[in-house]
Length: 86
Image (cartoon, rainbow, N blue to C red; front, side, top):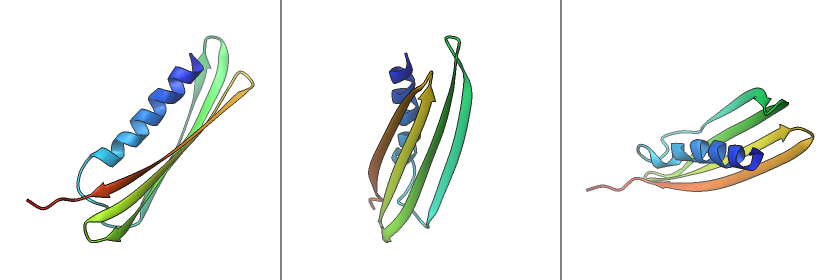
């Protein structure tokens, strides 16, 4: 169950890279969530950082740390964002 939770959180965080135009400036975000999972307390810390490389091209990196019932999970991902002109 904990592994499925991590996959869902990574999927939600990485969805940001699929929306909108290329990165217009340096930006980022950090989040925290915690709660009870089948009687065990769990907590997540996640973040995202984006930066422009060229006018129509940007990069984004994501990271996640999860702790549930004395078990640690980590994850990371990278994305490129390309704005195409029609």
